[in-house]
Length: 72
Image 1 (cartoon, rainbow, N blue to C red):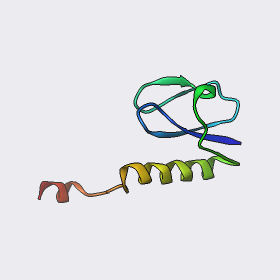
Image 2 (image 1 turned 90 degrees about the horizontal axis):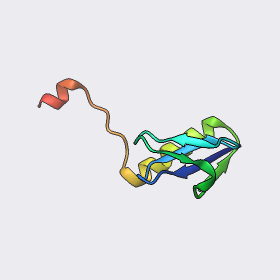
Image 3 (image 1 turned 180 degrees about the vertical axis):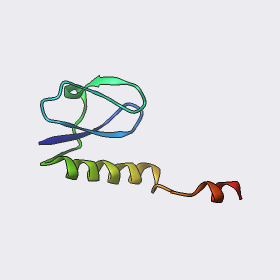
């Protein structure tokens, strides 16, 4: 079972049930048991997909471009 929650910075994260600490990409380390659990999912693939969906809802879809397009 995997738990999905948010960091104080707003980023969605997931961790396997039973993990004590998790480090966010923002650099903050926090205790998983102190977080509000948004969802519980059975496997890592589903957890990753759910985190991606939550991030897109909050920040919009990912935009991928090439370096050539950035110069224009």
